[in-house]
Image (cartoon, rainbow, N blue to C red; front, side, top):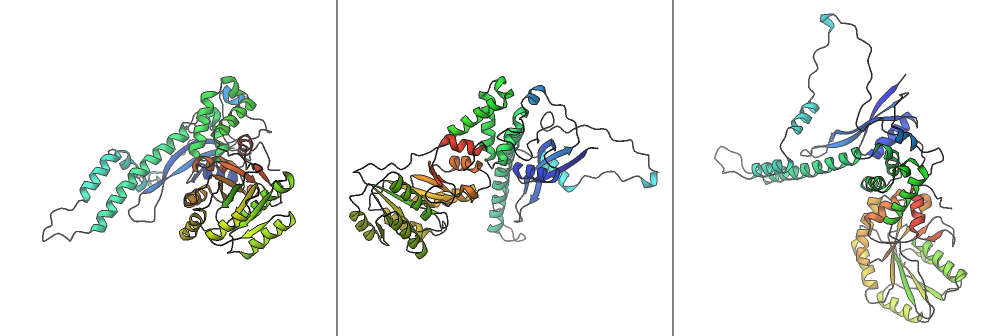
Length: 451
């Protein structure tokens, strides 16, 4: 007996997650569409669109031969718990079924005719409304103050502002709604499982749609039928979109100064220790450490302990003048690593201190350290705040604590800084590696493990 259910969520990823949790990996997607959601908190805001997925269990779906041939085996690198989720036949088409004939009810027990609900009336009204730009112009025209009469109430500028804001918001939501709906319906059926896998790995929906479209464009019919071939092509497409920086390369006799900046709690001090231990013990580089982390005594002592273990000179500074003096004392070294105090992204004054600290000294590289346990939106905001420090690359930490790796690709696209290093644990000096596009691509697709 078939079991058909409908799930709603704010995004495709959340809706797919609900399907997997409620119905398991044997569920079949029958229909995907966008429907009106709940109204916002403000009185003038309009309802937002939601994703609606209809899925079923125990339903036999006839799939085109090309799709059947392209289904992945259980050992596919992109396999996940609900990998069987795929559209039933063509997109946005419900499965047709016949209902048993109903008995005729007595006239006095017959249900009343179905009335149009307010939501349906509102949807029909919206569908028949003129284009958004015409509505915006009309709304702005209607909101202009008219000649007042003694019998009319006084002009209220707050109401005019609310009307204008509502019109602008309506235009933007309409454009976003049409764009997102088109992205979902444009995914080829034979590549729908790849699209959902990318979304499930927390790759941005726009990036996932672009990858699937390019895969369809560049792959031959034979490659699309061959899971391994299509997987290799997808990995190459992802690799081409990743921007990685070269690792730190000290040159004997030429001092290189590298500073690490970033918010609190992302692992800057531990990362400094990993870099210093590798350069000193593995490469035998003459180097020193400078820390301006005077806000956390424990962090200074932690770095001092590492410096003593691997026999490195270390200076603690708190002003630009002390920073210059410390660098002058380390003039004969090949590499100097600078550890800075963690700054809250919302504390503009503390971030400005970094700019003044580095203003009059020669620094070759500044790496922005960020933790992958944060959302991509949060990391975007952090990168924007720390622009004043003029970072040249990113070091991404705590990958071992991140649930999925797709955000590496999204972050690389959203933040225009090359990735320089990845840290994959707390062990010093082992859990750090130079960023490599091919390696990150395999991590995004689940083909590689961190250790």
